[in-house]
Length: 165
Image (cartoon, rainbow, N blue to C red; front, side, top):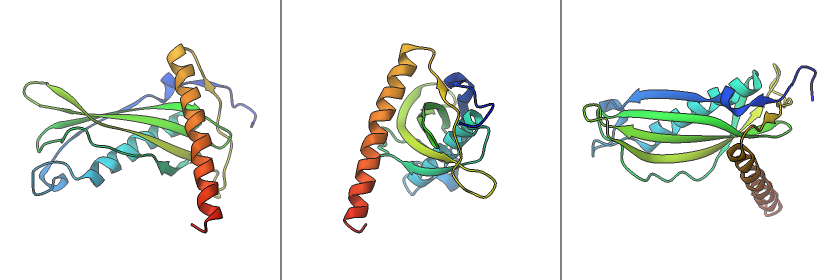
């Protein structure tokens, strides 16, 4: 751990973004392009990761992304990201995405995603990530679940490399 890297609470990483779904962001059915939503997720999560690290970060992975409800043209898109876990050089960020009807205010959960980021120095080399200060049981549970997912990701990556992929 570098000097001055004191544990930081997850609340300091909280990032919220709001977008409006415009015609250029929609497909022929008038619903959001999945890739556009993924872009917003990546940006929101990256800001949360940088707020935690106070260093540049790069996206290492995004876990499965399943869309539960469409986002329609003209709806407001609300994204909320927070660091779930911090490791030696990487961290996991969770993002929730909601659509909101601009007139009625009715909201729907559209998708959630888990992203892994690596902190990098000025030369693009991995650098340390400050520990996460776990203040609530929910945060301790999130860190434990993220640790288990990380173990699985690393096993999958090792298996893939062994198979030549």
